[in-house]
Image (cartoon, rainbow, N blue to C red; front, side, top):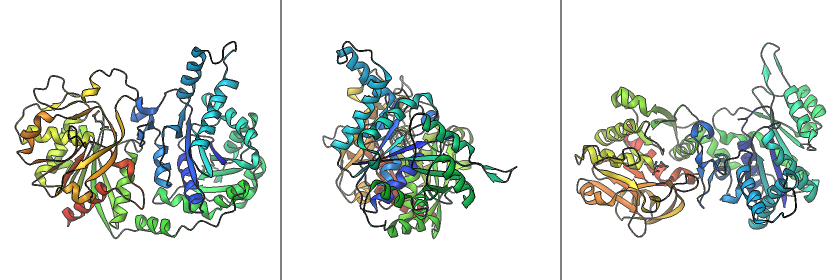
Length: 533
Ligand code: GLN
């Protein structure tokens, strides 16, 4: 097994996750079996309890693990299907070290960061290597070099490389080379300093991936090479991509990143054949037409909060050879200003998942507009619950119908807590999570879109459709097109008298890939294009 550790220098948000994922793409296209993992230094056990403002989207895996959004990049860029073991946090590491201490596993010893915490980190990397077959593990360390909380991870990696041998491991440092306008120059000093920090703890990167707005000329490359003790050919330029993140593997390939990594790790593999990837990028970069899609949410000012949804829309658009003009609509503004002002002219409306009552009424307005104006609607998790509330109120006349999440006293709880959620008080990892099967009814839109009668999708929710209202709603044109196999939980709904109004209790956005768009997103965009013309 070979290991690639990805560290970050100078500032956060450099796209370490994307750089690691892109290297994964290139290696896979050379026939290397890749596995990916993320080591996050924060003390939360998982990001499931964090606000999207703090952390962006929570990405859900098939086994129900709530993880960092970088795992979404890993799954979209590679063939990996990740699991709980692929995202380690300091919280998990300390939780298990402390449990061992209480059990008496370290009896007589003083429990310390070195060796106990570092050993726990190493053992988790080893375990992944043993349990999930691959040729290479790409492991990204969250945060920035110099962060106090990242130190145990870096120390663990130093020890780990000593154990596996330096010929079997490589450190790829992703850094910023800023352009200073006043001087008209690219500056290498911040990178030098972050490398110095790594060296202080005994780590020497073999590859530098330099995020930069301007091309790195020969002089800058030589300077970085000399000061950072990295061969000049291993100074890799990673400029901001022009159109899509899927260009990044191609850019890094042009800089020979994968050649350098393969050479260092002794991987004798043919060059990466990227023709179909290039074709995909080409379709994203120069689409034949464009379509306006509204996403109505409460975190729309935050690029990362609905990451997988935006990605899924892009994948689906490429399949229709069209580009997307995203109209990001703040749900609270929609409530204030009304749908005519903010939604007129859009070809399709997406209402994403969410928690808490802020923006709910605005989302209900969006669902109502989609229903009455016959605009294609795609509701995701909360977006399905919203569509249900809207229909109950405005078609069935159930005044103040709501989810008990937003109105505990509602006379018509059309959405209420899952039975097994009633006793749950802990907030961490306590929802209905991960992969669950859905049985689809024949002859429905969902059946047509999926072309299947049984699908499995990823979930993350506490509330569900209240079956007591089944008859009342369905007698008015509300269609329950997918349920759990035992028919107790509603998984998919649609509207009978509407060209395309589909909503699901799950999150299809976690199962879409560039060359394999999710059927729901693909169907939604097809309908949006039809609506526009
Ligand atoms: N808040 C809703 C629930 O818990 C929806 C969750 C979501 O959209 N992920 O059921």
